[in-house]
Length: 259
Length: 310
Image 1 (tube, each protein chain N blue to C red):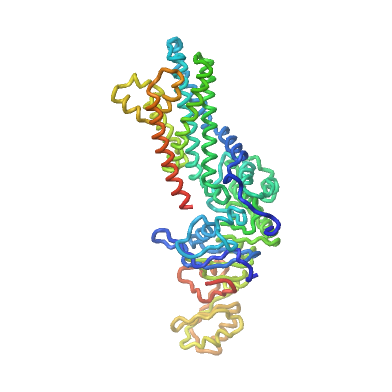
Image 2: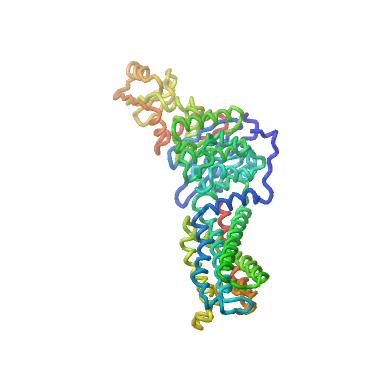
């Protein structure tokens, strides 16, 4: 109404702002299911599978077996957190919220950036939670290496934020995580996060090296100075990142064209 | 008014979904300051047209301009805001958080409390959206649309889910803004809402405009009675001049007159012509609306004031 008086502009960064991020995070932390999945599950799994007294005594490189399993579970938790963060796009499209947002200046890229940022914060919280529980439950690894494990796990699970986005666009439904939850458990198993690959059959172990969780696991545990082929793991992550980011970008551009 | 840039300029837009043509060469100009009701039955193409005006859907053919430019740009700048039927809300935000989040996107934006207050949900603002009633959720959508202080407000079935008091408050807010010059377009299938609140009513059927006029004009068309008689070789011109006759239609040997004074029409037909088999039927507003928007309704007798194309 105030055509003359106001100068209208669009927001900087396409609408990406601390306010938006803060509100989204607050909402995420209120979601009991998300909190249980990403913060409680991985720690419980760790306590179930990683705290056997023989594991505490067994050394793995610079740490003990308990710490090794702790890092694997942190990767699993961060995968869950980032995938579900990425898949929020699907949920919000199914609810019609994206349509409501199209009545604002929010750019699709800024929207996705916010979702990824929220996913990454949840991933970080998940890693820290498992590490704190691990520390109390007898995981041993020098602090510097522990922090490095955490940072590597965190950065690498960015791949799974892209995975969540891609799957969210492919399976647009309110309950996409009901499909992705079991899928992630399967991928974690195949990637050697629950059971080390050397305890699997040769055929299975060699197939497992091509699955996306394998690369993240190996890199996150590399500070133990003990495990697997890091070069192969980097290649693994790069290839899957290309697939998921490319896929998400492709689906997203089709989605915004349709407006 | 007609010399300024129209708030909305729509020319010959077409939208098909598979075999269905939802909008069929619809043209319409809406001028700044007008309050226009977009009236039609479900499936008439109202929502699809609104989507195209907002740039949410691209027309297969034709032109859409909002304030002389691109619709998406006008939306991004907050010159146009809308309350959509299909706009979803997130259940785990509170009403206030939803408004805060949307406010963070507009430059400038009205204060959060102000729009909550104007939409009548300030007292329940800290309630989660999932626990708010349908009417409160609809008011929330309205609050969001008020944030950019838009020059043009588009409302698609805005009062769905509101109770009587809610509707009254809602329309009084709309009217007071319109009085200050805000252009308002609302799609509805409630004839009474269009009648009570619009300066101009655009009737849509099968994706095109079948009547376009002031509420009074549409009402005149929509009320009154229809007198049908068998009268071969009727003198259409002289019948049309009769007092109280607003439409004359000849179908074969039948003549169908529509007008406010059916007694006078009947008296004239029986007293001054050879008419026989006379029938008088009355239309209430609802029936008239149905008649005007029905599949076989005539479109030729629609009044079409300046700027409008039937």
